Length: 230
Image 1 (tube, one colour):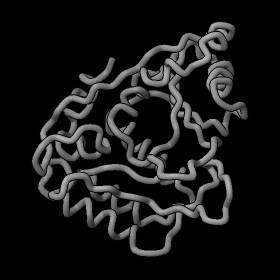
Image 2 (tube, rainbow, N blue to C red):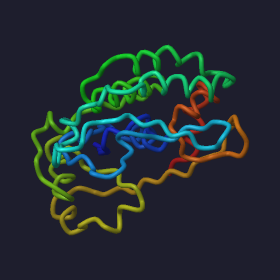
Image 3 (spheres, rainbow, N blue to C red):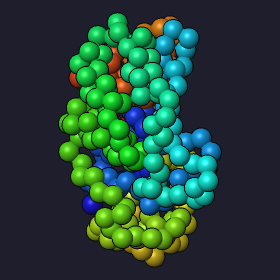
């Protein structure tokens, strides 16, 4: 069984979903440490007439020390939950498939999710359904795995019966290959090379949130995404 493992990013880029599609089981790391600096867990890139459009979900960090991802709470102060859908509508109103998904996005930002994990997972599961990705999703917290580093990856594979683990190419050189060999788990390289597709607003920008591809390409997203995989 092929396993892939990732953090619950906010509206991730296409390669995130292609890795999940190539897997039998997709494990979400919800009990690892939430980064103290900027992170894809709370923000991602879209596109507008100025170029890159960043959308960020504010979370509570000050005075909270080190937090695991599952414990990070969304800050509902300010107007971000109204600005985000307004920014998307301004940027993508002319995209051919934007209206197909705008109601979902308005609902996402209007709901007062307590945790960033809940908001991100609702988006991830929505995209799984839209792209017909049948891979099972499991959370680290469901497995009771507390190790760190490579031992965390190996133990997740053991608990789930995984025989191989998809690893992005840049990460492979940092793996403890002896640990994987002793555990009988095969690290399988994964790479994603983005293919250009029709975008609004000038020159093509790669690796935006997958919503940019969905808004512009609709059901062809699955085919375009797959063409970048290896």
